[in-house]
Image (cartoon, rainbow, N blue to C red; front, side):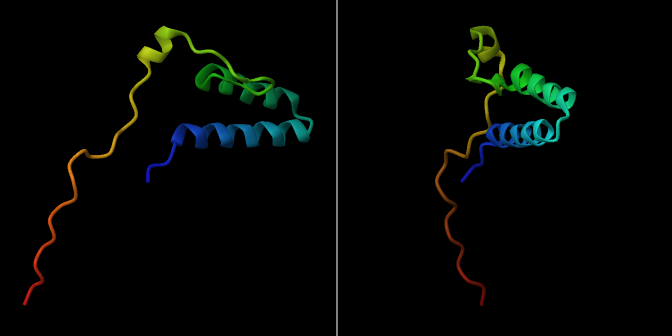
Length: 78
């Protein structure tokens, strides 16, 4: 099973944003919010922001699993 790395990064940045905001470090929280908004298209105050068509097309495709089936089993060594 493949992990969604993008979602992991967003979750980590959101946790950092919440920790900074709770600690009263507004400048740091806004810097993290800017990273989330600019690089991941996620607005901490309102959810996902729409991504332009050009940005969506330019984004690299995620790695995919091999399409071929499983490898044949080898016979046990004697």
